Length: 94
Image 1 (cartoon, one colour):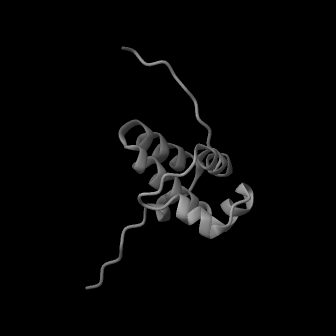
Image 2 (cartoon, rainbow, N blue to C red; image 1 turned 60 degrees about the vertical axis):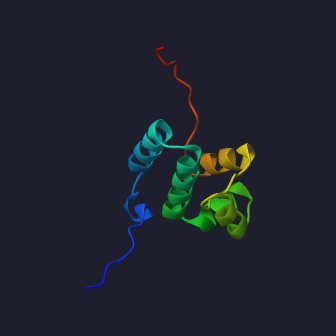
């Protein structure tokens, strides 16, 4: 029996699922997890589309969102905007 590698991008079918996934990673994950999640979302939407909307090349986008990458904040903001996301700060209880 053949098995295939699990790709979360295959299951991010709508904006609500994408938002839930990214919010969960933001709450529970590390910086690297957040970058990887943004990369999964970009793949789900389509790297070509995200590249066009950010003004970045596809290879640069893949590199910026790959394992171990440390993209600039400007890059993250461009990609978040292109995937339809935004950063929002809520007060936390201490």
